[in-house]
Length: 230
Image (cartoon, rainbow, N blue to C red):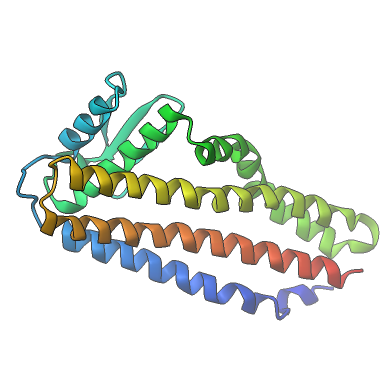
């Protein structure tokens, strides 16, 4: 009754899962390394973010500290840049890279960056798909003779989650490009310090690539299982 529990499609997910584990290790080790290298300008993450926002006319966008590690984000709903407490206070290369990246998201929001708008539009469907797609799909798979159509519903729902992760890539890459440009050209970092900030952001980018790879592969697996029931 449950042949799919042992099907070969599990092997499709192994490479992206390994990539995801490697990406998490990479971002943590790179962040740890450059969080110990202080920038010579002596600006904290909070100060750097504030300067970048003000320079782009975003004087009403606050910069707040939030608990946790690597919990930094920009909230487009409340228009707030939130930096984890270590980043908020630190003057390290890692702190400036992260602060500039999150400020870059605020600038994207201000300028109506297309990929960011698309991501926001698919977010509700993506959240729904991430929660319901697999239960619905596997109910349809188990009882394919009676409610096999549920597999199609699950696939449609999960497609929204895949779309979210895929469109996240240009959003994150663009924010990192903005960050490096402003750090290098705005007097935040000396030329020989920029490479450290770039490495931090490149390592973080791998986590988004891995997440997209995992979801795309999961969708492929669902399509293969669906086809096997025809």
